[in-house]
Image (cartoon, rainbow, N blue to C red; front, side, top):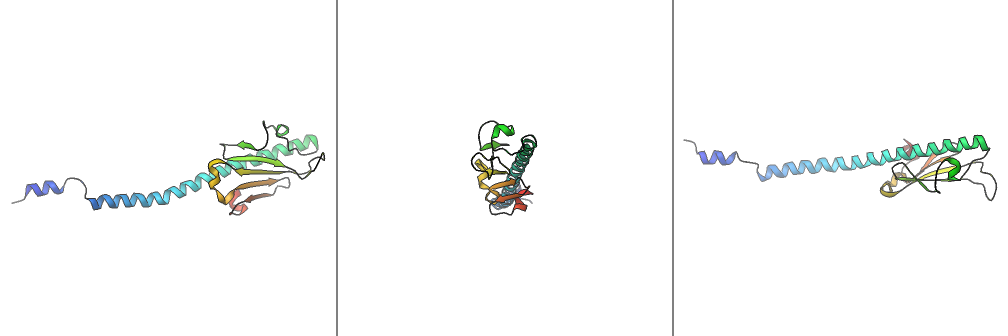
Length: 149
């Protein structure tokens, strides 16, 4: 004869061990997923910065085509306000500089996108830089190839 009280007790719920195994599996998955997600978010924000840099460089080239000089004035390039200008979703700030001194016209430019706000956790690529020669460089612990790709 079967003990009906034992069989009904055994089929109710989970044991503590089963619950702890499930929690452990969830913790392992979270430990893998969160850093991967954070890295993907940082990379997507870098894409925004690269787009803004290349847009600013094309604005410089357009200005040069009509003025025969480059400009470091934001309004000449179609921006409002003063440098640094926050671009995209607010994770990078653009600045433009040239090597000319005094009243000499700018014959070159350097555009920087420095990380800003929550993006400062991206120590690998703290700044993206493009110059009038088309050179694309970066600052931080990663190489320019990593930051620009």
